[in-house]
Length: 545
Image (cartoon, rainbow, N blue to C red):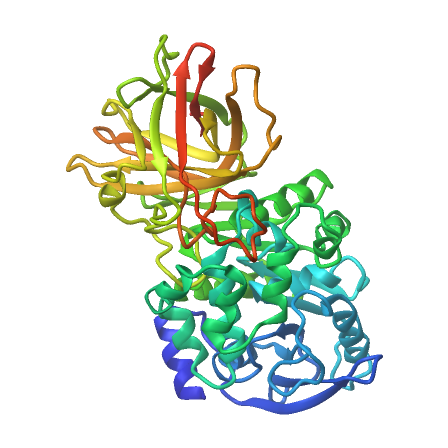
């Protein structure tokens, strides 16, 4: 493994090692209170008595790539690491039930740690995605022995990502279901780093949705079926599987790393704000990354190593002075801030105008614009935050040429414009259907006319959600992904409006039938208003100069 760790260390430009002599203890048995036994590997530098300890609870295996990245590479830099396979995965007993057992099993694992002869008296936790959720699950209850947390591309509850804007994340949910169902039989990294969209294209097109997991993995996945059935916000099912209520109670120092194109970013930033409002000072890094990029993992290693050297080893000079570090896309530079959003940020409305214009001017009296959404030929996603597919910005001109996409474009900018912070769509619309979706995407149009997506979001509409005005219009205000982007002089801002981004979001069939069983497809005739009584706009965040 030392040869591979040398290669990864060089590619990722990791800090120098302290030793190549790493002890690996495999298949340690960790008993749970209900009699189930979970397996773990311990990685430690030889000849060091009770080095600082990292706990990594993982559903993707405790050897292989995860053993290398979170075991060997940290052990070579002075830490001991316990990587535990969570319940029902890679030889650990029980059944894997996503989110259900992580609180109790995590606390039981910490109690077991404290009885081991190599326990140094304190520990930290580390990991991305699901490995981040298991940290949130226990962080407020494990006591003062927990000295630090490093959480990358994750959040304290996964319901929001499963139902962003109340539409089902079909691509990500099915891709992850396929990954965890097959990872012990196939090359898991090949699945993560190779998009599944093309392979699953006929499956994504299938209805009803209750069949698609069986088509993908050859059997129904209980958790996938449960997600389809429990789609109402605030349901008891999801309340029992989230840990967002305890975020404010975490006292250990915490660093967060996210990506502008990551599936969890909006809710990771919500966790950050919860900590700030509770008087805590987490560190935050957001880079130009998607969820499963190698760059995301390697940058997470850099950030967490500095964090652990500071809080477990007492090494000074490891941390930057400013707690927030953002990559400004478009400018292609890193920037440091005291908080998120940056202090002094102001909101600016760019109004939709007749003729496809976008400007700060209020709209004049005008007629609405119309398009038809056909769920039998759903508007494609093209790109945007997904687990393993094309999440990074791409040219949107082919999408904007569709009849079911409206575009509104600003005049060319006379000087650079930076948008840093939250972004919202504030739209006045109407639909021929009570059940429908509206999707908004902000793009950067360069001098050659290439339209690159910056951020986007979707809202699912149901009867009285929201209630219609007396004139029949609906006033929709919904969040797009946050951003930090420079629109250069000569470029234009463009807003797309449509009613879908399939298969990133499951299509709205228009029928109002249950999500899992819906098969009837009804076209929606959509109207977008832009007049003095209905000043539709996109709301961007402009930082203080």
